[in-house]
Length: 253
Image 1 (cartoon, rainbow, N blue to C red):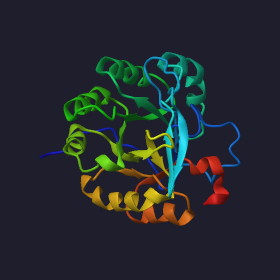
Image 2: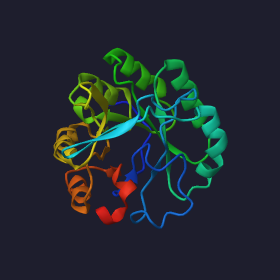
Image 3: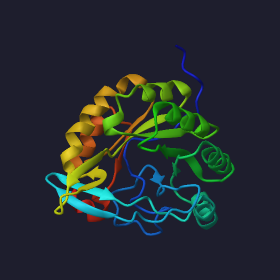
Image 4: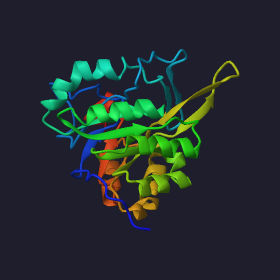
């Protein structure tokens, strides 16, 4: 099967932040960050305003922690109003991360971003509970003039819809945190995204599994040491996203 024409994602080997870890625009003062990132990824943005999760929190388990936030944000129109000028004047490429929930909303956000200076790519994450058909429809709604980076949780990389998304014309795949569940002290369960160094071996294995798609792969998840970053690049990743390690500072690498 022939591959469709797709916008080329310009990216250099190195690191960038994962969505949700450095805000909606590149920080004005970034001397505390690791040596120059190759791109900046915005916090996740939904079409309408989204409040924090009612049961948000961070719960540790051996090897990492479960993070649940609900992706709070003021909504697409407000974010673009507040930050599009900073995107246009940023010194590095800006990737706008969209929460792709509804087809018409995704289409509206993408078409608007195509007209905003400084936006180098669009990164999307899909609803965890969506079926394969809806996921593919959301991907197709997000395709356009800008390179499209599809975030795929580590536990879903083998799903058939991922290969179909590549065939549809996405420009890159980004490995994102898988979801997990741990018991709480009251006999219930805590659900959220899995973070921490304990998932790094799975991330490194996944990079090898996805080489066959012949589009850039942005790796990540579990990177807490300089050697982890270097290992992912050596395994074939085009770049590496850092997540919670940015809260601790580069010294922890």
